[in-house]
Length: 97
Image (tube, rainbow, N blue to C red; front, side, top):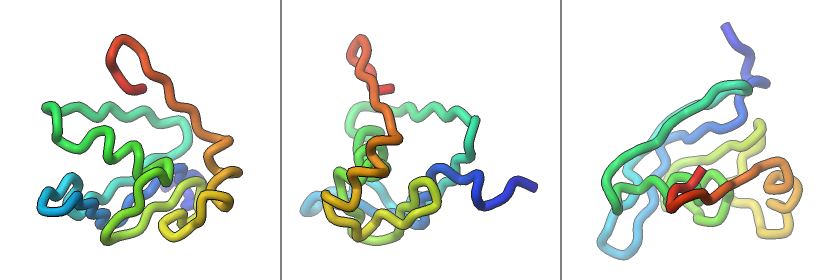
């Protein structure tokens, strides 16, 4: 069984809302080092919100987000610098990778 240290991303019951719209509703997932994941869905289904929450660009209304074993849910912008320096985001042909 893989160790907890292998976790690079963990969402624990994450909810993100924009006024009356719930973009993510109690999302839980784990990704380990070396894994790939495809997130697909209709426009407006929360794909970009999920990625922004993983980067700490959006704070969840409920739940917790861990990146590289560190809970980033309540970190300040300054505290997120080191973690973000280890993450890459690439836009290509209208898609977010």
